[in-house]
Length: 194
Image (tube, rainbow, N blue to C red; front, side):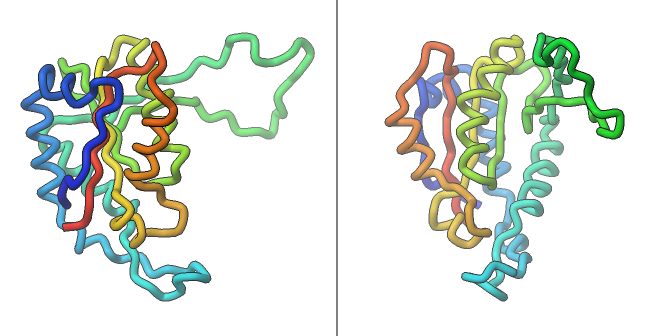
C-alpha cells in the first residue's frame, strides 16, 4: 500500500514530525510493506456488486496488526466503568442479559510513546469517532498527546464493500467542522492500494 494523501488536523503533521519522527518512519514502512493485492479476497454478495472481488477490510486489518506487532506496537484496551449514575433509581437490568465488560481500545500504541494510531476501513462514523472522541478520551487519560488515523482514499474504498468511508470525505468534514479546544493534533494518512 502507499500513502497518497495527508490531512493536517489541529497541527497533527507538525506534531508527529517533531515529536515522533522515528515512529512516523516506521508507520510509513508498515504501510509500504503491505501488499494490498493479497487481500482482494472478498466476493461481494451486495446487489450492486454481486460476484465482484473486493478488498477485505478484516484481512487488511490483520495484516496491519501483524506489521505493527513486528515493530513492538500494541493494541491498548481501557476497561470502562459505567457507574456514573446512568440508571434511574429502581431500574434493574434483565437477569438474562449477558454483561460483557465494556472497553475502549486504541489500535496501536508503543511503549513509552504518546502517539496513538488507528487504522480504519469501516463506516464513516468510526473515522469521526476515532479522531473527535476516542483520541480525545485517551489524551485526557494521559495515554496519548498526538494521533495518526490511517484511512483509504476514495479510489481504494471503491473496491471495498458499500459504505466504507474514505479520506476525501473525512478531510472535508474535519476541515468544515473546525477544531475544538479539546481536539488533539492528528495526522490523517490517506492510503491507496499498491
